[in-house]
Image 1: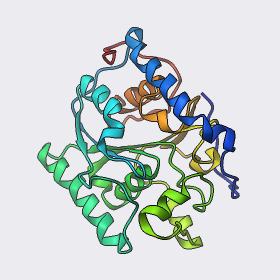
Image 2: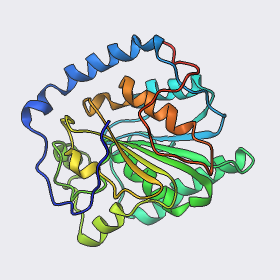
Image 3: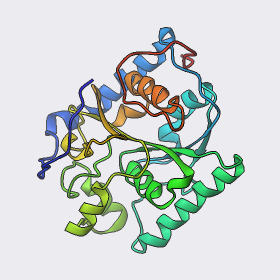
Image 4: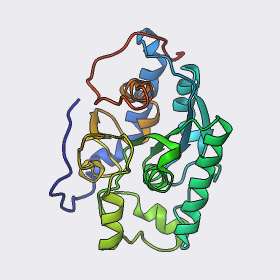
Amino acid sequence: MNQNSAAGFTAAAPPSIGLFGIEPWRALYEYVGMRLMDQDKMPPGDGHPVVMFPGLASDRHALMPLRKCCESLGYTVYDWEQGFNTGPPAAIEPWLGALADHVRSIARRHGGRRASLLGWSLGGVYAREVAKLAPRCTRHVITLGTPFAGTGRENNVAWIYRLLNGERPMIDEALAARLRTNPPVPTTSIYSRTDGIVAWQACLLEEADQAENVEVDGSHVGLGWNAAVLRIVADRLAQREGAWQRWSGAGAAGHGCPS
């Protein structure tokens, strides 16, 4: 696993058509790998809540393997409760506010325990922004293949956004600066240099005391069930609140996800 900094980021080209074309096959290979990972051990969870945010043109079903893994480790997992992700609405601020209120309600339901926010692709952008709005209710943010450091042009699926919304995603300089700003809580960006959907450079955060980039080998579509991703997520979620440490790459003994 390699770690990098987003300092000096400049717009990157979308992944090659070759990588984009083989995404489904690589994702299938990763799914098989997940099903065979019964020998891998993971640290048990402490039961704190985890809220999951799906990617563009997907819903909670796309993250079901990851959800089942987290639940098997002992976490209480919640959906973002917005159904199919068609992209943010025009009135984005009140919408993000509602997402933050959802996280606050979950924290209250758990006696004030902070929730970890886990987002895939575009869902990771939501998770980061919600953490900025509700930092006292957020324990950790983990993003999977999330292009928060880009301009909206470093991907191969802008056509899906146009299909769902009738226009291409537009990110001006002010919004780009906002999205690049790290949440004020421990934050992990998991990315792949062989991502066939978004440019990996757009997934790099500015590393700091509580912010890290962790690289895996995998497709974009398969990040939600990639065996390496599941191990990293399990390790990150198991970090004690107030005692966060960077990913070391070393596995921890404990319970494993069911195959």
